[in-house]
Image (cartoon, rainbow, N blue to C red; front, side, top):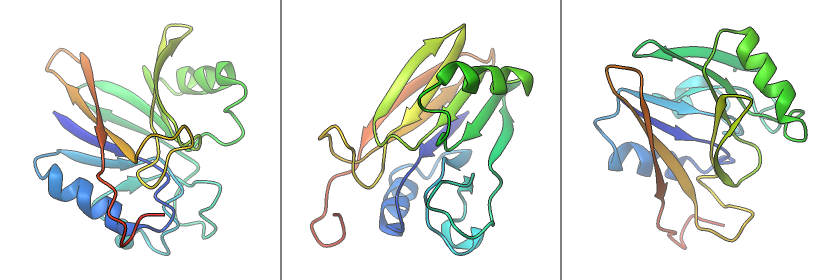
Length: 160
């Protein structure tokens, strides 16, 4: 199974189009907030959560999604970034094995308290000077995860 993960495109739908075009074989496309979309259809087929810059209440604050028997906790992460232990507990209380979050605009893949945490960075701009990033998550039939960090080539016509 193959899942595209992205976050923080801040209205730059061209970045989402690039992710879809470069990964047409994904089973799922998950967005971790701050799309700034006005409707869910605007970012389809991405399934999203609400980010701190997503003012219309069209997305839930968090989602629990499963793939190949593995449960993921999707959240933008604002309000939890400075206390990841609370984020891990929230995910654990919702029966999840992995936290997927955004907000920081920095690609992160780490473990805390036995929980895997993944942030694909921003597919618009990253705060650490890297180019725009997203992630491809592979899940085998045994539920094992493999993460790929991907970069989007900046096109000066539409990137910041």
